[in-house]
Image 1 (cartoon, rainbow, N blue to C red):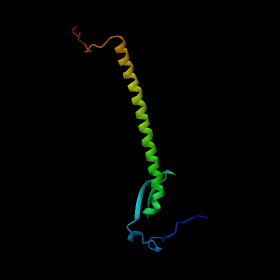
Image 2 (tube, rainbow, N blue to C red):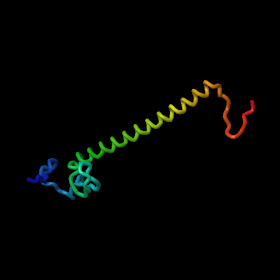
Image 3 (cartoon, helix red, strand yellow):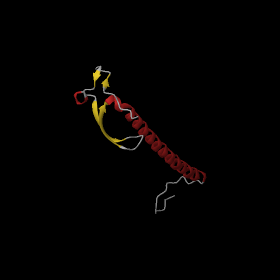
Image 4 (spheres, helix red, strand yellow):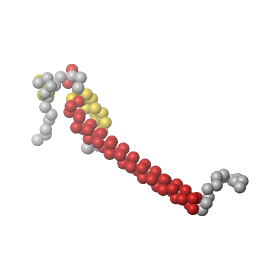
Length: 104
């Protein structure tokens, strides 16, 4: 048995007006659950669950990218801290100039 969506609109209490309604919207893209291409018209309220799932996926990807950047910055910061500690321990507090001798 295949389920078909009804045409009844609870806002106006009669059948959907389709293109006569401002909320009747076309959505194009990929279904976040199946990956299938979507190019359909439906009520904006009908699209809300699908778009909410898509938004959650995008937020999850953004959070993962932010965590990855944080991890890279933590490693770089630890390296810079180690260099600074080495310079402090060995009294290398003189200004470093590449390819030149520093006057003492």
